[in-house]
Amino acid sequence: MTLFEKIANHEIPAKIVHEDDDLVAFHDINPQAPHHIIIIPRRPIASINEVEPNDAELIGKMVILAKELAQRLGVSDSGYRLVFNCGAQGGQTVEHVHLHLIGGRQLHWPPG
Ligand code: 5GP
Image 1 (cartoon, rainbow, N blue to C red):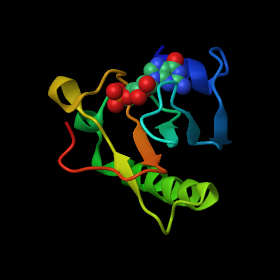
Image 2: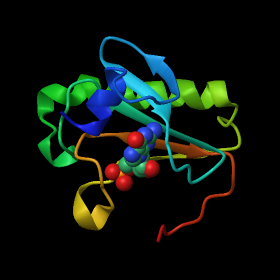
Image 3: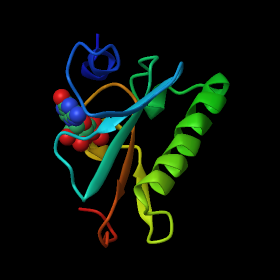
Image 4: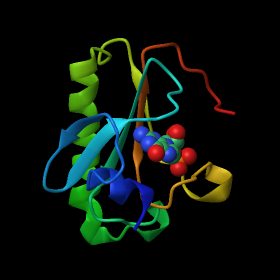
């Protein structure tokens, strides 16, 4: 079982901000900005490389939830960033697909 499945199952504590049948969202343990939320599907797809066409609705739900959480956090107007890291050079460290929602400060481009 992946670390994030254990968080979704409440086997590892996390500050969960949203749960539904498909998705769980929680605070990142090592936040990179004042707001840093991780959004995961309950189903443990390893990475974006493993996403299939019939996952389109699920991935879309992740983006819609990110938008809603950004509104709840009050960063919709100031701006925020959504990131899927994929693979080693993409910076992915947990092999359970996840969307980072990062906001609350000026973010820079390109990322490091
Ligand atoms: P990645 O580097 O794979 O894109 O993102 C993984 C994220 O998960 C990192 O930002 C890291 O801080 C976060 N993370 C790793 N372990 C834990 C944990 O046990 N709890 C929480 N809440 N976040 C974690």
